[in-house]
Amino acid sequence: MFNYCSRFRKAICGTQRYRSKIILTNYGGRIMSIFTSDKKGKFDDIVLGYDKASDYLDAKENPYFGSIVGRYGNRIKNGTFSIDDKSYVLAKNNNMNHLHGGIKGFDSVIWEIENYNSNQITLSYLSPDGDEGYPGELMVKVKYLISEKNELIIEYWAETNKKTIVNLIIKITTHSTSSWGSIFLLRQISNYAFSS
Image 1 (tube, one colour):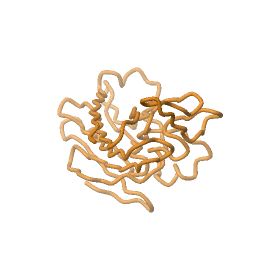
Image 2 (cartoon, helix red, strand yellow):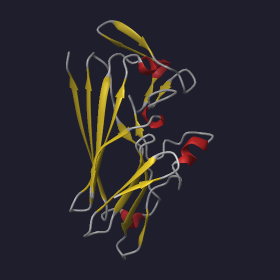
Image 3 (tube, one colour):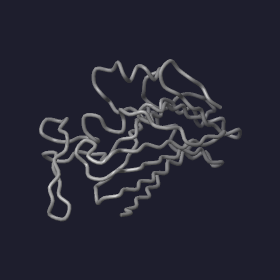
Image 4 (spheres, one colour):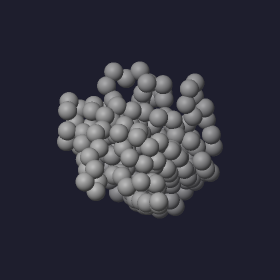
């Protein structure tokens, strides 16, 4: 199924058996909602985020809600790293540090919707050589799948043409409710490759 909002596409994936579904936008590859049932059968959205994709653009601060974070998800001290004795200087967006991909990380770009059906969607993005200071082109694909066991499986692929660093994550923040725990499981799989 496919829905459109005013500026960015949203895709809905769900399973018949559990009725779970995820709502995404290709702006930052964000998971905007995960609807599932708790142990008592109550169906509700369990993640924090905005109701409209356009609200992420209007936010004064970036909470990274549900977004794909990269090229490197985490903080890089002083915004520098070295590979083979060569130093790289990254964009600094956290005082003197580089956080979650920099000023315009993967959370702030439009991802291509490559493949979708009733229970899965694959997004892709090509990060150019030098993007936010990182070496090499980086082709990234992220697949979201709701399995028949009611698992949200997120699988990452990344391939580069130069040695680089990469650490892809998705920042999913759930409501602090203990009853969701065993009902909807999250599994993440990473596949990284270098080809010269």
